[in-house]
Amino acid sequence: MTRLRAALGRTTFGGATLSLIGLLLALLWLVPLAWAVDTALKPEAETTVMPVSWIPSEFTLEAFRIILGQGDIIRWLFNSLLVASLVTILTLALTSLAAYGFSRTTFPGRRWLFAAVLAGIMVPPQVLIVPLFDEMRALGLVDTYWGMILPQLVAPAMVFILKKFFDGIPRDYEEAAELDGASRLRIFWSVVLPMSRPILAAVGIFTFISAWNNFLWPFIVITDPEMMTIPVGLYSVQGSFGVRYAQTMAAALIAGLPLVILYAILQRHVIRGVGQAGLKG
View 1: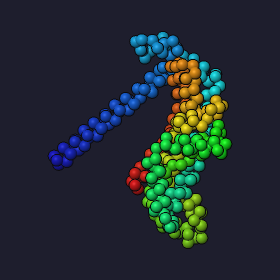
View 2 (view 1 turned 135 degrees about the vertical axis):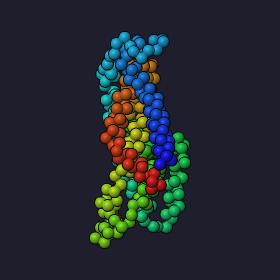
View 3 (view 1 turned 60 degrees about the vertical axis):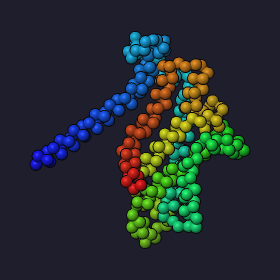
View 4 (view 1 turned 180 degrees about the vertical axis):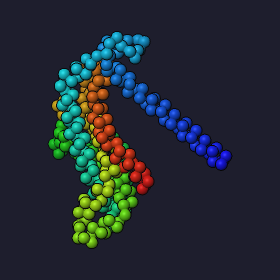
């Protein structure tokens, strides 16, 4: 009995210590976000005053009013939302079909082809920028939405993640559907995908965040200000007019708000998806 109490005491102490460390790390992570909000609510003249202070003479929404009043940021938000949404939808469609094919079908050269897909994970995206730009220019897709979208659809890491998840799904469900006369595509759509909602949500939100935050490729393939995404647009404004800290932080907070809302909606599915993918991997 004494040993059991000692073990419980050690467990409680260890759990409390880990919780405290996690809380401190969370607070440390929140400091830059709090500073961004504080700067965005300051008058522009006070953002460069030394020594720095958390509490300004007055809190104001002037930076947000100026940013939203310019009009460009609304267009950039729309472009980012359109591009990120299409990239996410098409990536989920392509990677799930490819992963299911690798997981459930047998064909000549299957292992070599899957090895080639995995090799794509090790290729830095920067290496492909020049050939991709030449290809988009040859196809007449420079300064178009498709020019931004198509190169972002290649996601070998997502194929690997989804294949590992599909490998863990019992085949009994598919065999029962096959006995009922369902085709391979019908089995994939009506049996496999509904069982894979958590991992699809996790892959989807990671893909959406990556596409939303992608700066390098849209910066290269887009020159028309009306076609810019939010990262490229904010960079162009900052480069043209110099650094206005309150406005920059206000624009950054507005740009990050859709991601916060999306994650808040899908948080439960993302956590389940990541957990199941880890267990099945």
